[in-house]
Each structure stands twice: as C-alpha cells, then as structure tokens.
Image 1 (tube, rainbow, N blue to C red):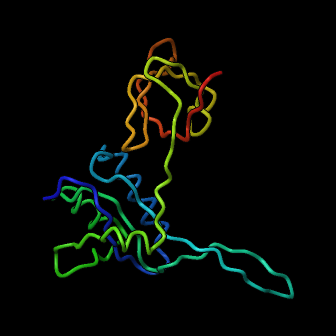
Image 2 (image 1 turned 120 degrees about the vertical axis):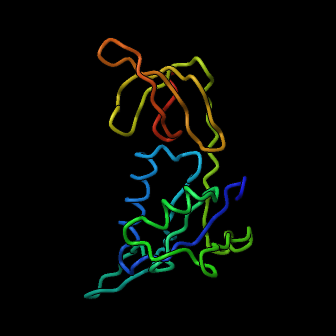
Amino acid sequence: MADKAKWYVVHTYSGYENKVKANLEKTIDNRNLHHLILDVQIPMEEVIEEKNGKTKVVQRKKYPGYVLVKMIMTDDSWYVVRNTRGVTGFVGPGSKPVPLTDEEVEAMGIVEPIVDIDIEVGENVKIVKGPLVNFIAQVQEINMEKKKIKALVNMFGRETPVELDFNQVEKIL
C-alpha cells in the first residue's frame, strides 16, 4: 500500500493509551515488525497543577484516547495495529486510515529526536540500558533511519546478535 513510513492516529479506549502503546511495542517485538511499525507515541504536555497550596508540574496527555503510530501501511501492519487490545480503530473513513500531513505532525508536537551517533561498524560499545546492561557489544550494522544498531554480544561463550537503540549504547573511550 505505502512505501514510506507515515504517522497515523489510532483511536483507543480512554485511559488505555499506555496499555495500547505497551501492547503494540510487545507485538512489534514478538512478530519482528520493526521494519513496518517504526514508532508509537502518546503526545504529552507539561501542565502546572496546584493542590493544597503547592504547585506541581505534571505530564498530561495532549489527546486523551489517541495514540500516534509511525508505520508503513501494509495489510499486515494495519491488521496488527487494528487488532491490538484497546484499539477501537484508525482515524479516517471506514477501513482506510488517513496519514497525518507533515504540518499536522509538527502542530501536534511530535518530535523525532535527531540522534547523532559517533560509532562505526567494527567498534566496541558498552550497553547502558535494557536487559544487557554492562555487556560489551561489537557493532555489525548501523541503521540511521530506525536509530538502531545490530551488534554481537559475547554471552555464555558465544557471539549473540542483538538489536539495540542508539540510546542503549555508548562508545567505549
């Protein structure tokens, strides 16, 4: 259907946004759909709340009941998102989801962090986040679009391939 990843708005049960995001990310991992569904976000805003005379800065959902998904629209990706528990459907007429325009994405405050990584293929990196924290990995491949690296980690005496986000690793100086 589409060859370029675009942002789509997914309608959820109110209060289920975080569960939908977690379920969707788990499904993406389980079915290995990282190449189709690239990002899932819940737009948040900082609000100053006053309770009992004390002011507090709190994170609040900008659009309750909605989750934004950056994906390449195919029958598989549509099916996975549409059938995630808590999702009531895509925003758009009938079964034809309408992607957001670049202007709408900007207006909604979706920021895709620009990550500049100073790592090259063949270098060793230290894993600083996730289940493999403190392991040393050798970089095999760098994917700038998905902001991920593929690396080999020495576990139990054998090299194991892993996929890591840029923010999960740091260069060994």
